[in-house]
Amino acid sequence: MLEYSRRVRSFSLSSIDTMTALCFQYDSVMLAAGTPNLDVPDKLKELAKKYIHKGHNQYTVNKGSARLRDAISVEWSKPLGRKIDPENEITITCGATEALLAVALATVNPQDKVIVFEPYYENFRNIVLLAGGEPIFVPLIPYKWEPDWDILEREAKNAKLLILNSPHNPTGSVLDENTIQKIARIAIQNDLFVLSDETYRTMVYDVEEPNSIASLPGMMERTAVISSFSKTMTATGWRVGFFIASADFTEQIRKVHDFSSICAPAPFQDAIAEFITSRDFDSYYNDLINKYKNKRDLLCDALRYTDFIFSIPQGAYYILADFSNIKPELDDFKMAEFMAKEIGVCVVGGRAFFDQLQRGKKYLRFSFARKISEIEDAAQKIKNIR
Image 1: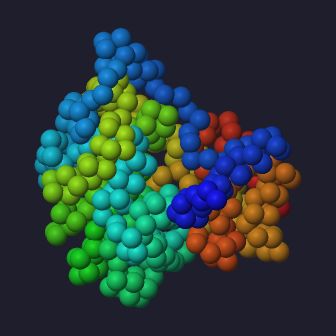
Image 2: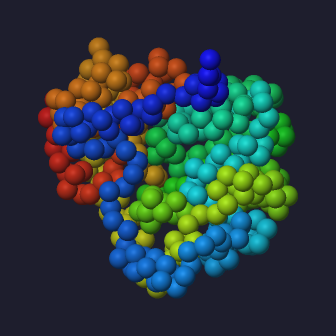
């Protein structure tokens, strides 16, 4: 009898896919997916055409476009607190997703324990399982969403890798400098690798753009920083991400990258490199962030009016909201179904971000990565819950 691998059989259909199906069924406003429905900037599309016509259509070198790596080196020198070597410390990948898996496969042996803060981006759990490791879930305490330090201190003693995500999906929280320093201290004391997913680092509101945990003493050699151009370029389908790590760490991660994807799409790498170093980028980026902040505020006002419990996101474009004051008799799936069918707004139930249903059953995640007209429509519909 044919038998598929245990690691694959342990996965189920994404909760976001399930809710997307409900969205189409009830013709609801889509606030479930993290995919922006904003178009790629016209200038960037023209640059992609330019590089396709110039013949940038074959494999790049394994590490990626030199021009893009140089641009990343300049951009990330401040949050990392030093000059980054583009030849030996930066690698372009097929989105952040490939980079996440490559780091997990480069660090985790079968049965190794990996700390995952909960609630979590669901790929974190799955990359640990694909690598043969055991995810250990450490709670983030509502609504500041800081770690339960006692549990973290205890679990770190037997762990191999710690996965960090700030700005955070699904809460939109941004860890402050003191919290990052405490996590770094625990990582060093217990000799942990750290995978720091900083995909949303440049998407922050009302706070300073955070420095990376890799900038702290003793952390660069043990940390792989992951990021992507998918969100800031609203080009999730282009699949251009990257990781930054020390030369020794990079050498090991690149082995996985080479045998899994070889390289990210060549013309898009050069198009992005030219765009982010052009005079057009700053105005585009500032406009993007101002629009996201406006959409955040509209959605938060509606949720506050309707008695959801939540913290205002400081980064990314998600809100994790507790609906206990509204329909305490429902669990997250039934509430999400009610939202799609009766209110006309599609969201994700909290179980997608927690290991145990019990811990996620009172939450819904809302994404404001949509057009302003959709956010306005959704906000008005949400106010009708009362």
